[in-house]
Length: 536
Image (cartoon, rainbow, N blue to C red):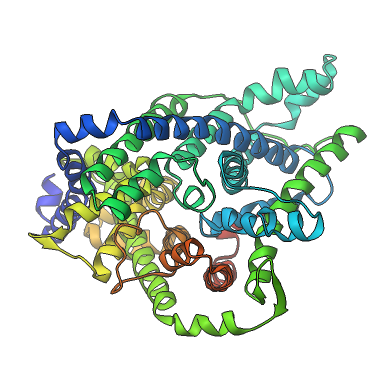
């Protein structure tokens, strides 16, 4: 603290970080809690419609989390522990939904498997109603299993193959080996992935609003309270219903799974090639991953086809009119790009500075900064959107219809990822560099500028890219904040789908995808191996 007192600029930075966390994270949460009255709380939560929506949401959490975790584990096991052909391509394909709008899977499956779907109606001659819980289950499984696969793959790769060799030498083979050695050691990763997916499913707004039909969930009901009845209090109450289980799962993951330690390496590890698996299992896993990879690729096929045909399901004449219409909607696309660049950059910068302070300094409210920077992970996007709508669309801070309210909401919704990346980066930098420079009289800010920043360029740009992608593809955070003055592409896409303009919606979605993948390609070229998500 004495050193901080001698460096006023550092003190100002700390005060700025703490003030922003209070204003843009804590304050909106508190406003949601305080906005509805006790009478309104009882009225809404006792209504049969919303009780049903709560049970539907919990039902989908159990169903979609189970299927996503299972498919994710099979993918992760295939990629990390087997010699299955094309496994690197399976990984690459499985990453695609992570960088796409959250509603894209549901939208594409309506076009592929709906009443006028090209597969169900055109190829198979079937009349299929994909709307409902079963369509939502399929969409959420495809949308969220890549999250589980990515987490589980890291855990499976950390298990030394020598342990399995030892098990084989003791007579264990096949499923017995998997059951007694591989899976028990992977259990923390499986549990952590399942908890993270359950938060995503619970908070999902894009897929339900597109494909759930009459199967209402809490997120869509909260939207209807405002869109249909202009009832902000009712929406706030329903968002609180989402927050309680989401925050509980978040705390459980942090306090229980985060403390588990399954040590598998006690000395210098030796790289051992993974032994070939049996022929039957090898081709079973290949077929399994191929089917789900095809389901992912169909998402993109449907979108790009939809953007270039005159009328989906009834007029397959090729056309460029929907592509040309994108230029008439240049405002939405430009807003999405500019807002996301500013939010991504601000989020990465803010989170890295916060990570530096927590990692390198001891100060009052240090634990508050640490916890609050992680807290947005537990906040459903729809909850944060309602919080900003209540907190910042009326005096004393009225940002209604401005770009600032969109940028700030997206920026602080994404700080958790950048912060965790920053903490990991600073933990890899030996404190001795900092101590040596400090002993030579360098100030904290000079040390940060000349020593720390050059070493964290890779993590910073990785945090920026991930924040940018999440910002440009999100719907739940901005759906309560977008107006005609600050409209973004995802909001327009939702309205176009609701009105049945599939071609226009597909073309606009494709424009977002092209922007997202262009940015990802540039990041890959610029950062190379330092951009971890692209290691295959």
